[in-house]
Length: 336
Image 1 (tube, helix red, strand yellow):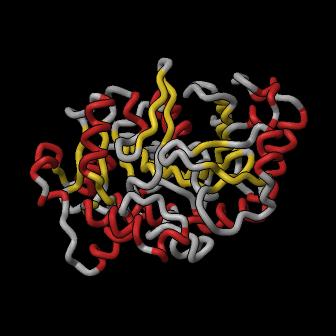
Image 2 (cartoon, rainbow, N blue to C red):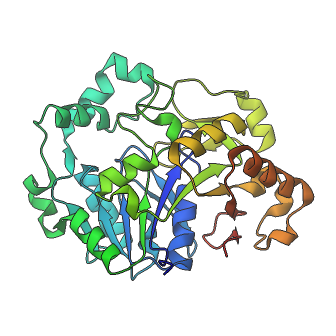
């Protein structure tokens, strides 16, 4: 008997900024997931455009736009309490959001350490305090969500919730943050984040075993960007990025993003390490403006189709979702 697809992991391929928020928002509306579990920490924002509003969310899962979806932050998450409470109020999800009782907490002292450490500043940290908070967790001295009074209304056992949902054949999205090239293990060390960002790590942080995953959806952007220090193969000058329309400002930090053309070898590496079974490509309309708003693959121009085919040939992974604009439904959906 063929099992219904119930659990999908959404991971980033490059240095973050690939448009995972866009893809999550589409899946939230189209697939109607029962649960969405966000992993990672506050140092990455997912941008959601919905009903004329723009949301840059550091903590609340991107599937919040589906009012029937339960939203969770896994045990591997690193919680910035003030930011989370602010986003709960912004999105109105207080009655359907849960925080794992064993998620660790970022304190003000961590942010101060992050901003004043010469070493971390040289790496290009966002200053939220994520790295120092992770250090303290590794030393087994960190505060956990269960220690914070403001979080008590939201405390839950995320792994238990998610696995019970999968037992009931409910639809689950595991929402990764950042991208593989920022992985502590597989990225451009030392210019990386303080954790692994691969699909395997996303599962681990959420408390879901690998055999429960039906698909790993790897998100690429049609060109590459990164913020902070570190290598970026094929990097363009700021002027050239502006000329091409690739110049961006990071949604969460307001920092300028550095730009470079799509790197097929890195795309292949990301597909391999993440064991990707499907791929998404966002901002195709930036690379090929005539794609803007297109929702049917046959209506894409020939050069855009060739680009998608080249990605598939290099990575061995089918591109099933193609972003052609900022709104959640500006998607070419090639899934069966």
